[in-house]
Image (tube, rainbow, N blue to C red; front, side):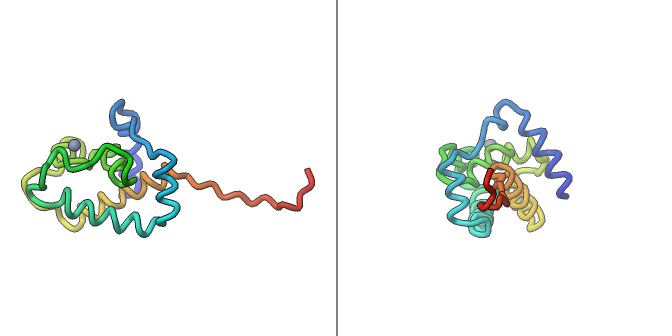
Length: 131
Ligand SMILES: [Zn+2]
């Protein structure tokens, strides 16, 4: 499954429209402050309320384009913004509720993308070096 996500994510990042979505610095900072566990739990909530129902409310317009939450940007970047995109890009049919497994897959996908956007670099430079 993980390999599948990376393959798909890579091909989406090459699309002109999908590949144009990235977290801005404010959103990266937001992830850092809230922590990945909190972002994951928000992502579950958003997917369950906005994408998982058989007929989501305002389908097609339920995901903000503005940088108000990192998960929304991830949803646009990866084809999880509405049921039409989910159908077209991930071949999950419309008109029925998403399964637990599909929800888990989408959340893992989004968290992988967010992690990749952040690419936190940990350095181990000894401050006593006198270079
Ligand atoms: Zn869409």
